[in-house]
Length: 153
Image (tube, rainbow, N blue to C red):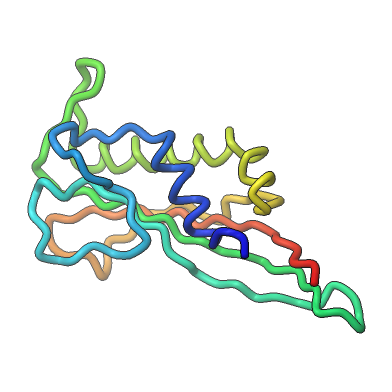
């Protein structure tokens, strides 16, 4: 079986994004949402999760299907923590938005690689700030992307 779409996207982001928190040695891009009790060393972080995956038959009499794959990518930043990149300081909404823009650019630039992994017709459905359902002091931006995948059976 092919790799799951969220793993393909997660791997692409891990290999192309700059981690502003240079003091950590572990991953910062995850397939889940962060625990609300995480401390400053765990931020910023990115979560890549399934949003929706409807499918329809390609032709009558086969098991082949066309899948529409929606993936949510969330950027999580903790307020009051300052990072530096190329002598420029980033914190709060500036950091959140810089990471979100880098994600959008990485996906746009690497559409051919995504297509070679079976994720075709890349589309950015939305990129929005989410203020509700977020713990105090945490800033979040959500990017929803869509792909088409044909499964031949």
